[in-house]
Image (cartoon, rainbow, N blue to C red):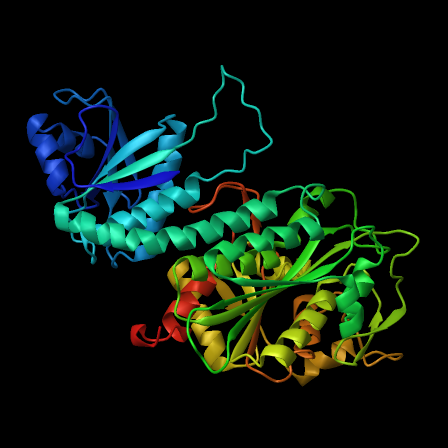
Length: 503
């Protein structure tokens, strides 16, 4: 979907969206149209039935006294105050409404005249952001029937005053960079595993070079030389070789970079500890952590963020075969720690073990955050509304929680500690890759990864429940969500980005 900004008057044809207040107040644009239509808008609001709700969209077809074919009254405002996220979610509901109405193009009037706690330009960009995120769908492999076209909003024009339009264009540049990172992450997660394997994902990372990102691809031979035997053990059952990709954006000269590490299991059968057939097709999204790291680095580079950031992703395929890793095998990680592989379906933490150790050893980051679709246990604990947050540093945890609240990519902090480390104590190796049966499964995964973080400030995000949605949400249609990109971009912007004069 394309977003444009113009200072031209609202068009007299097509679909026009005008904001109104939840208290019935009319924006300047709505008042003008209401006068032309002899009170039609006020009557429509009165006839809506019940109190008006934020995000409600009231559609008027062929409105009497007006030339437009469709007029949509978009209700905005919450009694407790309207946040940017609220406006984004209203934009998402608008996209769904326009999509169901099969409107391919729409014009959005300014919110001038409404009290929303932000400028009309900021409100317009927030609405447009939500609209674009919600309107995106992965249709690459669908061939639509001509008689049954899929509804899709393709363009949203923001009609603002001259000064508002200038400010909105500036805001849009930054917002488009972040949206681009989210949508690229969604695209990667949505690709089937026969199209996007480890090699193809590694090659896709090369696309970031056009944004000024330095990309380094470590092949199997290099991984063997580095001693990444935990990661290599996961990959050994597949005919497809593994890769580790390092992506670095140097937007500022900072003493130590901020590091993001992603689990990139491009398809997960469970290995010898084979998963049930039901639902296994969804395991193409077991690389969503790596996709989020990719999307974050793209977003930071595209908006020229004043930060030194590095992204490291481990790309493998977990398959059963005659060469596959067996339950009971013992592998030595890059750190030198030995691991008893009790369950080959607990493979993501093995990939992250080597990637996290490599990252902290090579880059000595100021902080390191890993993202992974790690455990079904996290879904049992938190559902699909929040991702699990585990952190060794309280300040980092609070920053992540705040970024989640601001972007709607919500987190919930779960505990770590010595007591939980006993869950992964092995009788034959230093540690084992699973905890106690049906006890604190998500925590066991987190404390396992923590053994490979070198004591630096670290956080682990278990995004198993939030990387993919089986139902439409406010800002995402069914499928890949791109969870993590907006969260981490906000974290950087609020807590790690250098002042402008240091760029």
